[in-house]
Image (cartoon, rainbow, N blue to C red; front, top):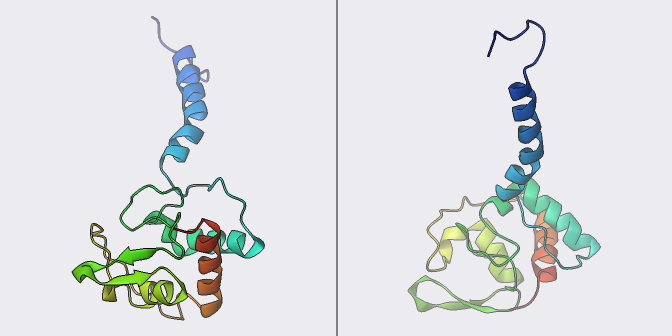
Length: 141
């Protein structure tokens, strides 16, 4: 192999750039920024999904049933969930509100991530209603 010609890309550089360009979308998809749920979302559910992404909920909570740092949103609405200490709660408006506003008050066993409380300055009541519409659209337990 001789020296590269100044001002010209070698075949190797062009080949690597092509591979990187093709692989980038696959790599980003594998990072799990959010799971696009294969369910039809209502208008409020779609807005709730957007807010969940913007607020950062989807960094710890999946929409496809997979386990992350926090429980999945899929199939939870109306389900009776077990909390630390053996207490149970119905996954409904009251449970979601408490989980967002005071997340360490009712932790679910098996999830070690510490969620930051979100007051109304961080998540408005309107945003909370949209988040609930999104979770509701992801299915009942």
